Length: 231
Image (tube, rainbow, N blue to C red; front, side, top):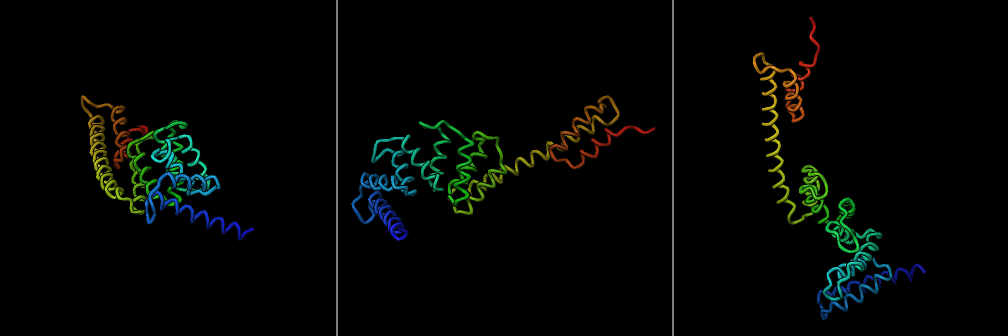
């Protein structure tokens, strides 16, 4: 039985590559319809790569009638077998929303993450885009940088450029926050200094804002104003 099963697996693999040859016209007459027939036959037998391939065929709708319901069904079956390409394909559908699936960004993020864990090249790049643009989540440049870095390590063609752009953006934000914090600290000093503008409450408020933006001097000044006066 085991030997028969191994032979079947080998036969499915050979048939799958035959379908690929038909689809691409590689050393054989190009026939996307013949390729689709082989993919669907193998998919019905549980072959994960063929399930993913026929899902793409139904989604594309060039060699068969476009059928997003069938595409989603086959993507799901392949994803259940941990096929990373199917996870990625299904994630794209969840990103945009297409019958029979409504847009679901958390599910798209989950599938992209799973595909990334399995070594997919484009999935971490898409995650970087999601966090950089705030697509259904809060903008998070550090998270975007993390995912773009993974995509770059996998030689994604656009990831290095995105990392450079993001580095510049993060530097600009950091400098902006630094200047903002400095201005907030100086306002705190103005309100703390005796004179017509003196207001300890205002001074505390500005010191607190400066501290939240990373000014190292602000917590000391804020604490000084909150300590009780000892006579």
